[in-house]
Length: 155
Image (cartoon, rainbow, N blue to C red; front, side, top):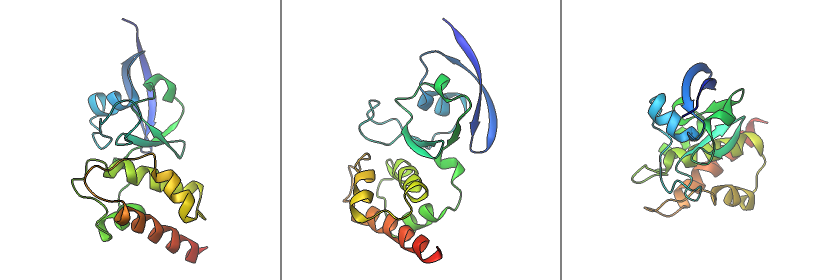
């Protein structure tokens, strides 16, 4: 079995890991680094529970190999302390059981940074890559719209 030593930049920290060629980023984050905010759901890219940001874009960590991530900036929910999106999810009760919440926050955070003037249609398209099995999407959409609105007032 071939192993690789990688230096990954996660949440603004350099972390050394030893991985197999076939290890997904999700497995390495959870097993090797103890970063359990990205959740294993479907493990085939459908549900979005494992969404993280790689170079400021939302990525399904269950579909990425860890060896693909060397030299990239990885942000997990653990690196999102008190961000406007996290606060909006709390203020708008945009969660129920919470299993999918980190994936939604990571996806929405990336939307805000990459498409700060997103309209409702674009927001819904971005959120379509995540699934919540417990509740409707109204509170989640309200939280994202709130941050988009506040950001447009600042600009």
